[in-house]
Every structure is written in structure tokens, then in C-alpha cells.
Image 1 (cartoon, rainbow, N blue to C red):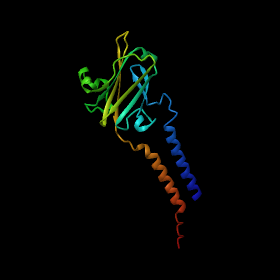
Image 2 (image 1 turned 180 degrees about the horizontal axis):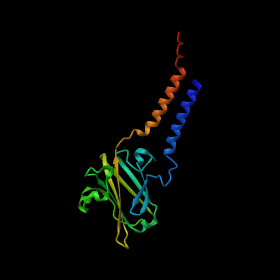
Image 3 (image 1 turned 30 degrees about the vertical axis):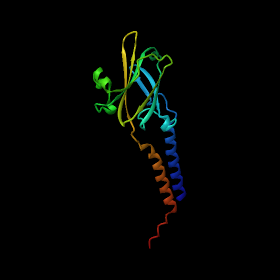
Amino acid sequence: MRLRSLAAGLALAMLLCGAQARAHGGVSMKDDVCIMHIGPFKSHFVGYQPELRATQEFCEDIPELGRAIIVMDFIDSPLRDMGVQFLVLKDVHGLGKRAMYMDLGSADDIKAATLFSTDAQKYPRGTVTVDNTFSAPGWYIGVLNATNERTGEVYHSVFPFRVGVKSYWRYFPYFLIVVALSLVLYRMTGRAPKPKA
């Protein structure tokens, strides 16, 4: 009985460890949350905080205050022929993760909320690198504008993100492993119940 409990506990621990390992690798393009849509076009993006998180990548929230480098690689080649501008806005309207371009207000409203922007330019190699320092925690809104110079059509991509927000959920699988192994150990070392008289 104890051997079965140990085997079950170890199997559970291995399953949890395996699930955690798969969550960080082998992501397909279909499931990749680091894909941003700019109208009908797609770009891959990833962020780094080299001074604080070494080579760790992120594509949603920025974990720490300080310098962050965001790299966007165009998946669709027509973006290479467009004038591309990138902006970071303070979320002055409290939109959070629901932010959409139409919610940002007029051009003057966007300009007033802009903390960082690049000039519109072409990126023939298909890679945009943005280097910015965040000094206050909270919600921000990234905006990428791509202008088709031939037709004059402008495509927008809006992606809200948080900066300096700690998330402890990533430690949850390890907590489950410790609990499972503790229960198995308790069952193995516990006293056998006394026979009833």
C-alpha cells in the first residue's frame, strides 16, 4: 500500500514538472501569445530586461521597473514597406487589458498620454527594437501604427500591458509538488491504525 502511495506521489510530481517544462517551450505559432495583429498583418514580439532578468523573455506584462527592450519581428513582409511608428501611452483612462484604439480618444488625447514614441520609418529587415525605461508601476498601452504609403491606409495595433506587477502564480506547480510529496511521505511514515477490539 505504501509503495503504491509513493509511486502515485512520484507520478504526480513528474506530471506537474513536465507540464511546467512544456509551458515554456515548443510553443506553436497558433498558440503563441507573442503574436500581435496589425490590421491583416502579424508581427512577433518579445521583451527583455537584461539588467534585471538576464535572458528571460516576456510578451505580456513587464515584471520589473527599469529598462525594458522590446523587439518586434514582422511575420508578414508587406509591413517592411510601410512607415511604422511605435508609441507607449500611460493608461490615463483606466482601460486596462480591454483597451482598444477607438478608446484612446483623439490624436491630441493620444499625444497627451504618450510617454515614448519613435518616428514613423520603414524597417526593411523587418525588425523593430524599442529601448525604454519604466519608472512607475501600473498599466500602459503600446500602440503600433503602420501606414501603407501607396494607399494611405493606416493600420493600428493596441496592446495593453502592466509594469512592475509581481505574479506568484508561476510558483503554484512547485507548491503542488511539495504538498503531494509531503502527503506521500506522511502516508509512508504514519503509524498503522490499531486493530479494533
